[in-house]
Length: 437
Length: 194
Image 1 (cartoon, rainbow over the protein chains, first blue to last red):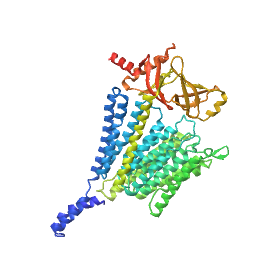
Image 2: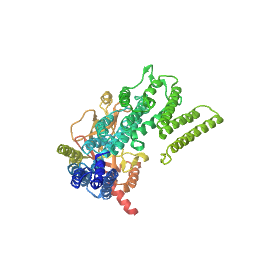
Image 3: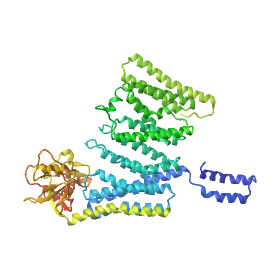
Image 4: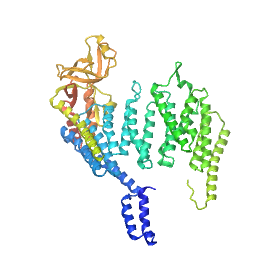
């Protein structure tokens, strides 16, 4: 129970306690005065205010720019340049006020932060247009990011964190554009490194907060997109290794840090599980995973940056798994080993067959874990994996219509039968219980 | 702690303002005190001519001849170079020399995408001022005028840009068609059609 909730509950109890003579009126009043300052607005109100502040700041910023755009050509060039600075000056004033007077308000910090972030980009873009400046997206994004990074830490703003990540992913894609014949660029990863202290601090101090939820989601999505930029590049292979280890890392991090959160409050789990499922099914098809991906002209072909990335993420996975073992936490160890399994399987000429065995094991283990914990979600996850494997095999192998039809009927019956059995057994144990979907 | 945070914020805010102000100051200085050069534009691919809110520009004189083919090796792997400008008898800017290292003088402009091409003693490049931004509602007509002017087979060179150059920096001042700024032409055309 957080201090605010405890204080509210205690204050609500004071009249009854005084009535029952457990405490006298003077003590009740002393307790009320002591605990009243600890009461904070309900979380839903804080969340609503924060979202309103962010949306309000975005709309005001956009509106100012549209008003300026209407009469833009009528203004002299130096005037245009100075007017382009106006949103930036306003946002600096608001952010300064926030730091001095409203530093404890999430709504103020997030609202002023996102307004400041957008004003930086708008100012640079408007000035670039005024002087017909060079078509250098790389430089534009770099300057925007450099000026935004301190904002994340000064205003402790999750929305600026997400905005920075959007710029960073764009920057990474610009550096690694398909048409460029230069080697892949890895400069953008320093931006991820720069964000890690902020993320780590939230994990440590505010793990249950909504801000931690959405910066986790943003970070996971950004890292995944940044890896996509390398797919097909000759100097970054085999791509299967970093992807598989990254999704495994998302999964074990979610189990280690966010074990008590479900659904959309645990985005790392959702993204990690989805990634493991999609990749593992894809790797069951022939010729996707092959030892040829590891060798080139008789030499081991893993590029150095990829090897470093894989080793770092593997070390993080091992650390997370070790931590969960020490704390006796339950998790799906078959999913956690996904990154290592892919590497081992790639050395074998029967890679797709081994991946089929892995996916079967993962599906059955997940299903059994779900039955043991009475978790409908886990049961369905395991069953979906098995069904996806069956469907995949039917597109890959040459089976007759009768065999496919029977297998689909059996799989569908299994799904329905399992769900009906679980729901029935729950109703049987507690008729008044509202059965979750 | 709060004071330290505010002091850091104040320093950071000054930097946030200083960066765009320095861009404004630098380019206003070039536009007000730089030397003006007229650059002939070249025909453009209709698809590339207009991308949203700007006109993509191409230039007719975007190659420089070296004193000897052996100098080409100095440009291997180079992306940015420095071009000294001169003026031809018709008053248009032409590249006189190109160098991989900075040149001194106010008649020098920095160029990009240096390439050695097929001919030994010739270096190709692109000028950095390759976009002309203008307001969305007049942009389509501006694009059409620009394309028509560049598509003419006569040698009138009716389309050209005025660029101010100073200390290696070139800033696009205006795009002209038939001696008039393109904004004026496109705006007049829009008013006539309304």
